[in-house]
Length: 160
Image (cartoon, rainbow, N blue to C red; front, side, top):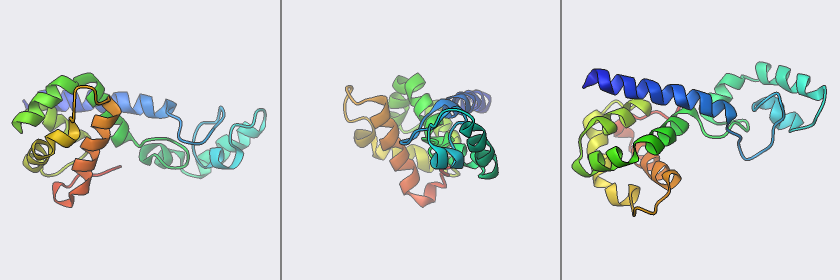
């Protein structure tokens, strides 16, 4: 079970890394990508993108992508959770209803939670809020799940 859980988490993180590099935040950015340079130069065309790229590197673009700051959209943990929900929603809902299972373990690993049993109990407790109906979108499910995981410090979940 631990091997299966590790493989699921590794795949979710790999997918989240690729997705986070293409995710735009609320603002605009040009070919230099998100980061501090995008906040200064936006999506201006031409050679100014060289300055934006240089500013991104000086301004810790990796940190911005990982945490979802500086115009980089959602952080890796949030994006990884979203990717996992999209790919495993039915299994996650079943495990959440039971309060145990590999899908809950994978969500706990993706969110870097230290209390795996606490995560399972919290998700089961908040099942109706996380899965209010079959019509709830993956984004709504993800946001509710992240709220459950990151609102209780005892679970030890980390946002970045």
